[in-house]
Length: 86
Image (cartoon, rainbow, N blue to C red; front, top):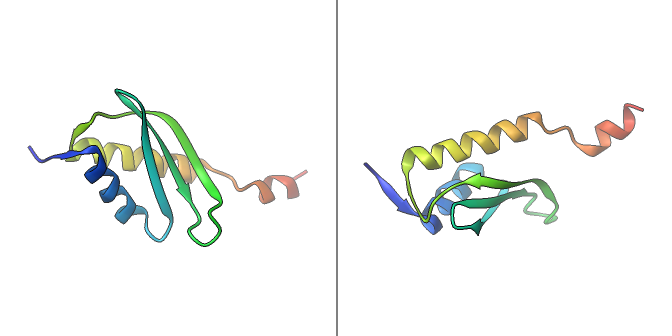
């Protein structure tokens, strides 16, 4: 089974989400906070806390995290669209 450290897993996720910016930090021994942001402005597009993870993860775990972030991104409605709807 292919395993990687948390920093290496974060690099894989940065590559995956490019050209958006991606950063993640472990907020507890078994969970992380992930943030997608606009590289040109630094504006946060999406932040998710409490994503299950480990300091050493299998490639399948990294794929699961990517899929969870993508699902949240798809469900996300930009604030300007919500303001215009009222």
